[in-house]
Image (cartoon, rainbow, N blue to C red; front, top):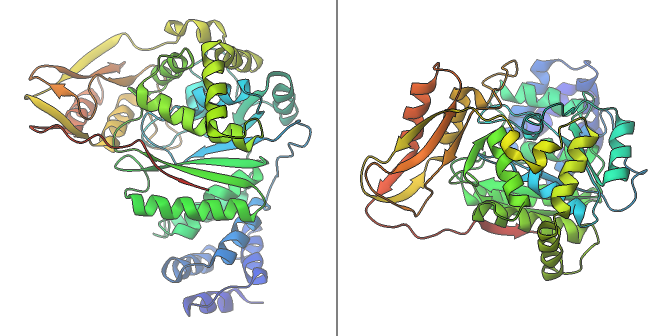
Amino acid sequence: MRMVDIIISKRNGNELTDEEIAFFVNGYTKGEIPDYQVSALMMAIYFKGMSKRETLTLTKLMADSGDLLDLSKIAGIKVDKHSTGGVGDKTSLALTPIVSACGVPIAKMSGRGLGHTGGTIDKLESFDGFNVSIPTEQFIDNVNTNGISIMGQTADLAPADKKLYALRDVTGTVENMSLIASSIMSKKLAAGADAIVLDVKTGSGAFMKTLEDSTALAKEMVEIGNGAGRKTVAIISDMDQPLGLAVGNAIEVREAIDTLNGHGPEDFTELVYTLATYMIMLGGKASSEDEALTMIKEAVSSGKALDKLAAFIGSQGGNTEQVYHPELLKVSDKTVTVKAEKDGYVDHIVCDRVGVACMMLGGGRASKEDVIDLSVGIRLVKKVGDEVKKGDDLAIVYYSREEGLESALERLQSSYVISDVKPEKQPLIKNIIK
């Protein structure tokens, strides 16, 4: 078998056989096939697409290219959650303790952020002493003991995907639905969960800007998950404005804890409860949405969910006092306020501008080598639909350095679009794909 024949076949619009896909994935992972040939194949796939069978085969092979996390020593149905990313998306911090408190074991690998704001791992490191670099044995033991553990991704998880994504990133072949879906799902399959709930964002702060593209991606990923024997559900949620009120790291952790105490922002609470509902049902602990929602509300009102977060943080070296007293989490005491420049209503908030503003403050990474300042962030005072008067506070900025502050404030100010007419309220949950 020759790589050039595989390239020509796909260039001509043919379906690749399972053997051909295996040849290029395995050969490229081992360094036996050069970048320039795989680049040519990625471009051919970009233009000619892949069938459902090709996409599933590619996903499985990438998942199998490195370590496969064995969760068989954990009792019960393990349900994972993945978000396609957004601004103010601290969902895992509130979601996973709730689901764990309802009896579904949470064994989750998460990554660091690159771009807008920090990832789940960065946010967790807002807790003093918290350690994400734990051995797999401790990870599994923590789940069996406390019902929940989250650790950083291992270096050998889906290495074929890492190589292919790095190549696609510099060859203009990222934006292909099959390649995006297989990249995401290969890591989810390798992470070992029995079922997967996907939070697919749509809007100005999302990777997929339109509902049509977000729905197509969700359907593709659900088909891959179910085709690989993992029950999979996708929730398509709005990211046309930041989720909740907090954007940053420690400030987002505080908001997640507020939500576990029953008084989080309305939109964030709705998303967390929706995702939790499906995780609990896939985990076999509830037979209906109503039953799951009753369990969720009881877990929050009783304090069980908050206690789960504390047990989890403590088991990985974190300061549990900060769970029960989130004011102890370090948030900068230097603040400046962005104010409305005219009367009207908040028509929309250009979501990715808010994320970039937070990155300019030091709350995100422009490159992998950047060190995040966990204490900085943005708290929104006004959101879409809110009435404002000239001079009203729109947002509060928490900063620790002057560098980048003026640019961040300008970016944040420009993200708010004020109009004379109150906009119609849009639903947070756009669709559910099963």
